[in-house]
Image (cartoon, rainbow, N blue to C red; front, side, top):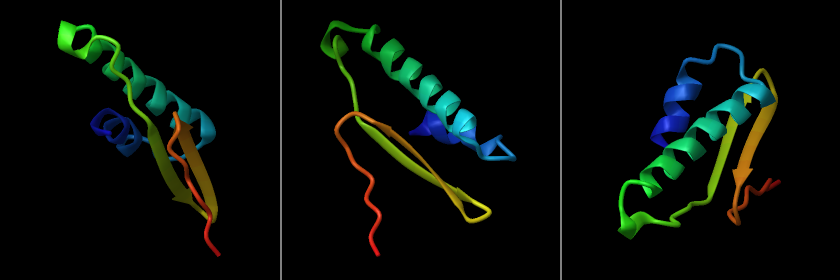
Length: 71
């Protein structure tokens, strides 16, 4: 979450590409952490994020967590 947030806070124009890049960076951070010790070997996570800009919502989703639209 920290890596994703750091990447997104520097984005002035939210796009699907920007969200994907931030998710990719976060994924790399998780992968690198999993390589640091045997206890973390094979570790993974799920991730969901929502960014809204100018009446457009962008959703990033990895794993089995879900984002729901409630009306």
